[in-house]
Length: 259
Ligand SMILES: [Zn+2]
Image 1 (cartoon, rainbow, N blue to C red):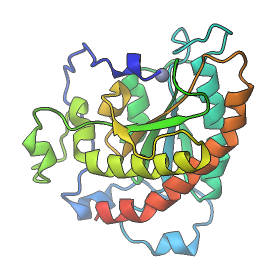
Image 2: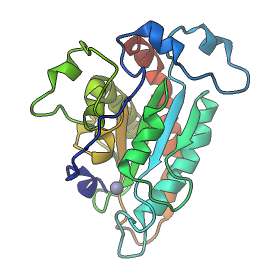
Image 3: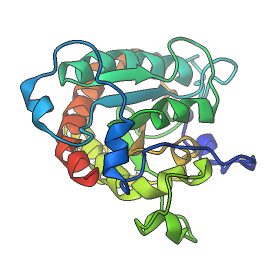
């Protein structure tokens, strides 16, 4: 359900948060504060890429807890379906060499900021929020990135960021281009695998994406308005493989953008 998620937050962010090393301004410092690599052997190909290779995918099964998201007349619940999608995407992404973090493991409901924080505390990371719509042609998938703000904050979009301080409510603004590219890669995979899906990704002011300081997209599958869940469940593997292929194809784009 993107519609409700699009509503611009009425909350005013009272505090300026530190996002250390998330800007491209100070590569030396960025390396100095870079988290140690995950345990286990690193494939030679990954080890050869110098700065901030894409290593981590945060999967966000949206909603959860009391917030079920979209709910169909037959009882299909968005928050359940997106969790099952995330659980299928995890091994597909791990097979491509990525570390995968979920914003929720079961039916809890972390806040938007708690979910963003999982990505914002990492280097070499992207964020993918998962939704099921209440409408739309059965078996189709739409991919969104965050739109350009109507009055862009030039200190954030010009690349001339004087410090490593970024306000969380503007966190996504430095990543709009790369998010759009990621959205397009995912949308192209979805169009191949799920006929009737659009060829081109769109933008939507999805609240969750706004506070993510990394390339971030929302994926929305149609729909909960089915007599039973099986058509959605049958999409799970194709979704997982499509997302994994798209994220793997995004690696060189991410590497170029992080230098
Ligand atoms: Zn939703």
